[in-house]
Amino acid sequence: MTFANPMYFLLLLLLIPMIGWYVRKLRKAQASLQLSSLDGFDKAPKTLRTYLRHTPFVLRIAAFSLLVIAMARPQSTNSWNKQTVEGIDIVMSLDISTSMLAMDLKPNRLEAAKDVAASFIIGRQTDNIGLVVFSRESFTQCPLTTDHAVLLNLLKDVKTGIITDGTAIGHGLATAVSRLKDSQAKSKVIILLTDGTNNAGEIAPVTAAEIARQFGIRVYTIGVGTHGEAPYPYQTAMGMRIISIPVEIDEQALTQIAQTTGGLYFRADNNVALKNIYQEIDKMEKTRMSVQEYSRKYEHYALFALLALACFLLELLLKYTVLKNIP
Image 1 (cartoon, rainbow, N blue to C red):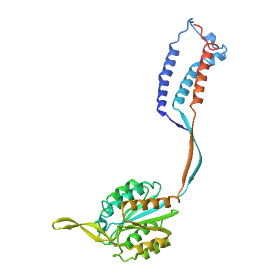
Image 2 (cartoon, helix red, strand yellow; image 1 turned 180 degrees about the horizontal axis):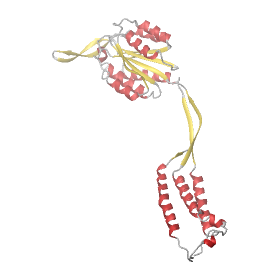
Image 3 (cartoon, helix red, strand yellow; image 1 turned 90 degrees about the vertical axis):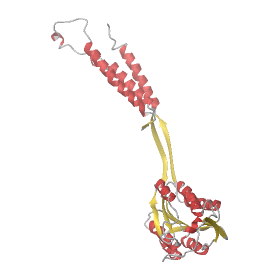
């Protein structure tokens, strides 16, 4: 039982002065005929009227209390169908090598990837999501968590240059696998995003993919970059210059990683394509989770209002009939 307007219960404090007034009135009541002694009435039989003399006041208190409860609007909730299936554990593995500063995506590849990743996280409220970043090395920026506000703040802080430059795709994938291997979720997913080829690290990307498959982890790979050449900001002694660099994405390796683990490979050559890729992954994985709950609220104030009215009418009936006082 819940109440829509619980603040009305403060009105029950008015019962204190009401009861105090009634007790004070009884003490001040004086008999119209004074006798020197009441000993002669000690053995007089007490009538039903004597026992019921306080009933009108009790009914008035009850009517007031029931009216306050009705004003607070008591409600009950009836849930008749609830089904919950475990969510999905997802680790996003993000390339932060300096080539991610290329501006074929706006404002650059890294910021575009962070923007769509943030939108993806916001839409997955019931899932555990973690974040791994890699270049020549890799580390966990955020472990699996449902506190997506913390995750989004850590994603916002991601930038190039925080670890040695390079592209160790195998390390990025292996670190993500280590965060998921002990997960009890029904579905485990890695989204690996990179813009280059594996040129560092001791773990081959295909080897990391085999490990992921052994743990039942599905990997979606995304290659980011246009075809041909991309504008890149290059710092010189004369200031920042925009030069063109070749776009080299090892699509064969990324495709093999995805196929080995039962995932898919995507190519994002612009912002819209990258956004559509994340939306497609979101749709494919969302079908594996279902949470349904149906409920309905019922109002019960009418019952208490009718009881309050009944108490009030009964008080009037007794006060002016059976328990009527003659001055």
